Image (cartoon, rainbow, N blue to C red; front, side):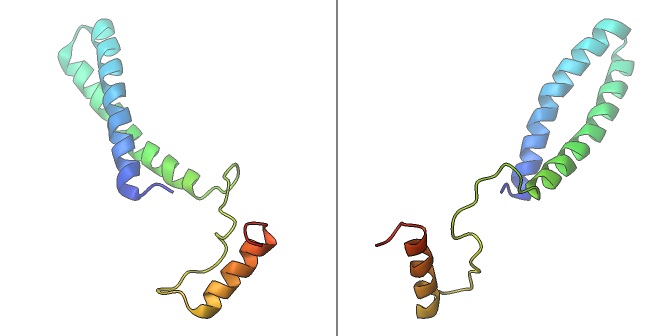
Length: 98
């Protein structure tokens, strides 16, 4: 799972690429720096927020992800001997331990 800061970083980098592309296209079409700046800034301000939300929603989707075989086990601060026994038992069931 990505952290929120990584999702924001990915969003910003992707938008920089988009800004350059849309800015270039808009400048070619309008031949007006003011219009190009306004259109590009508005479009990408909206898109950066939408991309962040999109990333966070997809992080909640389990479909298509491979889960670690012990992912369902709750982890508290330190592991107790009972926790270690549960883990060892599960690893035996999965064929990782004999």
